Amino acid sequence: MIKIVKVPLQLEPFLKKFEDLFTKPSYCSFRDLCGALSVCDKSKTVANLCDTMADCSKGKKARSSYNWFLSDANWDENEVAQRKVDLFIDKLCLKDDDKILLIIDDTYNEKNGIQTDGVGRFYDHSKESYIWGNNFVTSVIQSKGLFIPHKAKMYFKNSDECVNFRTKLEIAFDEIIEPLKVPKGMNLCIVFDSWWSSEDLINKCINLGHSVVCQIKSDRKVGINNIMKFQVKEMANQIDEKHFTKTIINVRGKKKTYYTFEKNVIIDRIGEVKLVISKRKRDGGTKYIISTDKSLSSKEVISIYEDRWDIETAHRETNQKLGFKDYQLRDKNSIERFIQLVFSVWAAILFWEIDNPSAKDGSNPRTMGEMIDQVKMQALGETFEYIMIYFNLPVPKGGLLHVLKGLGLKI
Image 1: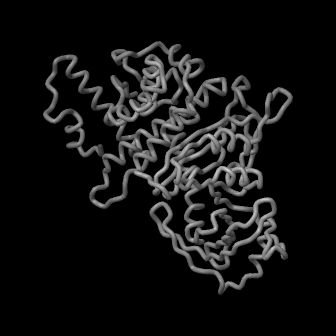
Image 2: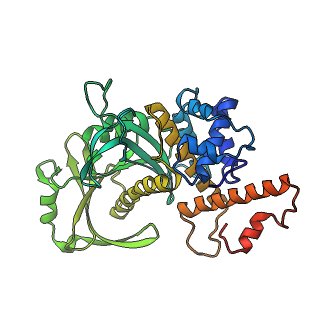
């Protein structure tokens, strides 16, 4: 396993921007854990993260100190999440009228123990079976084709033991959507699938001045001219195929073709929205997507909804590469703090890549997995350089990283 002697080069400038949110000892713990998360090859438990830090690491603490940082230290993971958003907006040079997407979904993490907060029996639709574990309401911030994980908030099933029960819809609004601050004049669009498309949640987003793009179910009733009401699937069946427009959009570097029909309709307790009926093929499956911003074209609505897939990518990559679901912690507060550290490492690595792009020859940019592997290689080089200097051995010209590049390793 790689052991680090200092925070990897790619992370340090980013992490310094959070220093004012912590006391000095807590910032050191934040820095150390984020550094270890970026390179640890084992499951990302606190024990393994602590073991990733070499004993000669500057300021390395006892494992109990890092546990205390996650459980009891005086810092707010929501402030860390907001700071990430502020830096994201600044890094992408977003201006008034630029669109930012806040994508909402949930994810599960199987856990066998019963001592961990929030563990229960949930139906996981991706597996089409029940699991025993945790359920999180999650979110991603996206703009200009780039995204960062934002927050993950634990959901507790309603039971006699659950105090102050809240639905996932309430958690999404109260803990993620409403607290999010973006510069005045910037266009924040909330994006989610049909499971989240309740009138109450949509209206709350509208009342905050945000727009919503979401899928609705095929049996949802819509009104036309304030008189006729149809289930959207019935409406779609009555539309002649010649009225569908061929729409081509770029989705994650590939072109996709849809056949779309758009119309302004009325939905009870929401009001007038733009409905886009889309098909991948003229005779294929149909999706029904609404936008509360009626000025958007059907192409823009479909493109925004396609970007919802970024949250699935974030779930997969943060879990496989950064240990999003590796926690072995018991209380809700510690777990959510740990996940926020994982999300912070993602943002740090992405921002480094923005400033130091690898694809200068027109080739495809690195994936997040490749970026993380590059950080590990950088850390390995720094560790070897430390050892050579410690034993007064000559460091190769240009540094050890230069030698590793010469061996054909992508750094």
